[in-house]
Image (cartoon, rainbow, N blue to C red; front, side):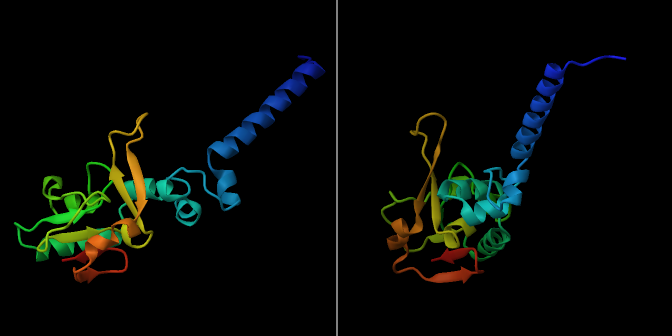
Length: 178
């Protein structure tokens, strides 16, 4: 029979409790129970939608493509003329739904940002769920330091670009203007 000293047993107990608490926080269990969010997209999508800041929501919708985005991109790909430009808001080099479902290459999609001065009269403007429902725009900014290459802004910053344009499609989450 092996005798374990009291000091060693209490040290193991304390270490075990520490690892259990650590595990509960790292897996997101505590965040789910308290209805908060941990910042982990895979664990707390609802928490990010409810309590997340603009950056957290932008990261969520960079990874997740809303159904409305897909339907809007498919509609646009079947109703636009090939030569007509489509302006869109995107935070990196991708516009998920436009490229994947609308088959519109990124090279044909000028970025819509607060620094955009005008949108040509015959061009389309494609807005995603993040833009329409959350009111958040994103942009890719390679000049930002330390690997953080995205930034967010309020859609009210670019609302002047839609003046004189008509909303020709809306599904409650995605909108298209011309």
